[in-house]
Length: 362
Image (cartoon, rainbow, N blue to C red; front, side):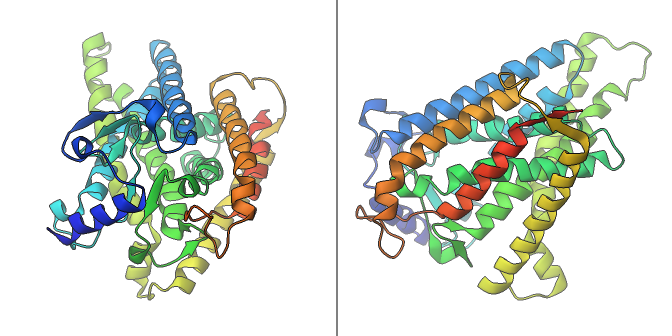
């Protein structure tokens, strides 16, 4: 047994064990009534619903001639596959045998030999897409340096919503981290996850999509392209955007910049660098939102604000449910042996999320 397989087995046992058929199958379906905790059903429905609603929203814009929304939605799926699968099987890419960073628990539908629940595959086109739509409809891309400013804001908006989820999941065994492979953590969440995936990932996806997908409408060799030609160009540039996103993502990570600058990656340097990076982007994004938007309750039932509002309400209820276990935890562990997240950080993210939801374009 390789070190990766051994680590996977150890993490599986920490979550209570998987059905043998799950680990041996490309696709595994389990009764939703037999999951290890009822909150897992909630997150499955919430994220799959968001991905489907987002697809419907993006298709409506595509039919009206605006391809950027569907391009982002599809590129997010490509990004997910390009990023998640190597993380599940690091040994296949020549990484060290002990390079497994985390595993997901057993949900209703699993892919890739128990590694990827369906709800995780829906995570990218649900929250990332909704964050992109919110920022775009707020008008933050319609200014000087709009792509860069918009991408930073997408990163921040995604971060504040995602961290409400990221700090909740470990408490009820939605996944477990292999903490030995991380430099530093805030409560139960590795800092590299909070900054890398939750912040840098959506920035990379926004940059790639915003630069490449519009080219599909501007590379015509004829005055009028056929519908087939337009769709083919759109598909090619969207595929390229999705595949380029992991490259941009790696280039933007703190680890890459620390290596380039010769800065040792220590718990202190990673934490300080993360705080400076996210706080700076937050300050810029808040200034942009204040300048480009106004307070308004209109449009709260439309896709981006409607879905993210629902997301926030659901997690507010989940966090209220989790309070007894959270408050009785000792040394960061509940009586069930699960790690807890950072409630102060989540509270701050929720406050910022309410601010973003309450703004619309002037």
